[in-house]
Image (cartoon, rainbow, N blue to C red):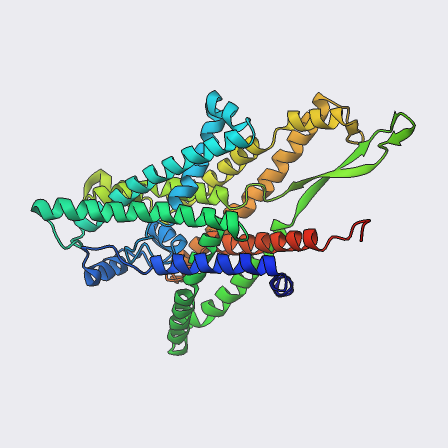
Length: 436
């Protein structure tokens, strides 16, 4: 990886793209430390400590980690890229469920631009809803500076609009990376936010180690174990990201004029981690809905309080739903991205066959069966990686370790994907053809 970055830096065009990407990341980090007006920052810090937003035991910690700590400080970029991610997922679902959107998505570049425009509007709407919920959470907690009269209305409008504008600005920054930088813009911003939280994680690790050195046998053994598990998880994620099932393909020979074409053997690669981290992100977003509702209304007793308490990340209900939702969305994402019938028809049109499988419906059924098995393996892998930190925190009591499974998957996945893009662009610039 370091050699790839070094080689890319030596290419002037790629060096400009890397510098532009780093500039956008710097702008993102500046916006992540600028707080919105009309808030009591001392009261806000105390509130976040009490509600465990800076730990991995809170559902709100999901937003805080992805935003690089901006959520806990109520800064301009407090909403992070979560509204854009949710908007993109919602549009993917609607393109499958609503025929006009499905036809629009198949119109080529013009259709994709229309879908992207709708996605932007949905992102702003989700950012507005999420920002409103966060404001009411701050108001109910007594963090806002003005709590009555015209000042209350004015401060509410300013704070909510700041959160919404931050969402729109982050979406624009991500698109600028896509156009003029290197890598996927939203993924790069997610990567930067998670990396920004690593000093906090290392600090918490040091505090637990100090407790172990002071005589706490529990932390004396669990801290080295955490480091070993962390390194093992990185290796497993790297291995699974590059794993694929290769279906052998044999192309028949055909004569066109005086030339013979075909007769070659190839393969159809199917990645094990088909959906990447998207099933985890979507499952986390769904399970964060109760906490978003709780921002508006925080019951102190009765059935409502028991309902919200049941969605604690250390509870069995949350873990069970998390596991099932990840598997469900992994299958759903595979369904909308891969069509076995279309794949079988393309093979048939190009005189390609799978050895031992008849063309047409049998081929589609064979591919469908392979996809189902591969998706199950990938979904189980994602679910175990996502639940491992929650289970470890519940067993060991090390809830302050904010580096969860989702964060590690994003870190490794974005790093590998960005390096692959650098390598592909360098290959295009140094390709030696027959004219060289």
